[in-house]
Image 1 (cartoon, helix red, strand yellow):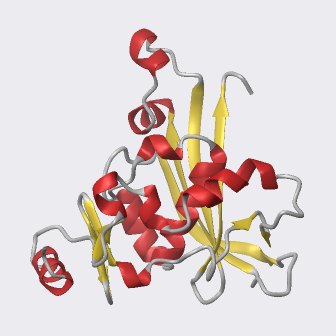
Image 2 (image 1 turned 45 degrees about the vertical axis):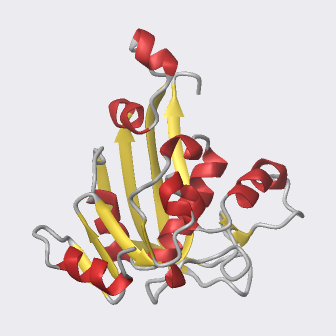
Length: 211
C-alpha cells in the first residue's frame, strides 16, 4: 500500500496541481485528503438550510436514509475508496449514489466540510469534468444570521451550476441514453461559509421540465 506521505509527495510533484494546502492536494482528476481529516455526522452534524437537522424537522424522513448511508465522505466514493485507512480521493465520487437532493446535499456536505475551505472547494469543483456553466463566489450581503445560536452567520457563498448536458454526464439515465430526452434542465449547489471561511451548509438546486 502506498503510504500517505509518499502518495502526497508524488502527487504534489506532478504537473498541473491546482491547489495544495496542509494535508490536502487537489488537481486534475484527483483530490487527496488523509482519512483523519474526514468529518463525521457525530462531530460535524448535517445542516439543513439554517439549522442542524434533527428528527424534529418535517423533512427528517426525507434525509434519514441519506444520513445513515453517508456518515462520512468515504461512503460517497467508489467502492475501492470506502475502506481506505490512509488517504482518499474526494474526486472518486460514486455519482449514481448521489442522485436525489437529500443524497446530494448530505454527500456534498461531507466532502465540503472535510475540505472546509473555499479555495479547496473551488479547486475540487474545477478538478474534473463536467465543468459548471456558471460559477461564482463572494460575500453574502448582508450576512444572514442563523436560526440557532451554535451556527455562525453566513458570510460567503460559492455557487456552481450545470446545464442539462452537464447533469446527463454526471447522472446518466436510461431514458436519456435511449431517447436523448432529459427531464432535468439545470443542477447545482450553493455552499455557505462563515466569516472564518469554514463551511456552514450546502444547498442543492435544480430545475426540470416537470417543475
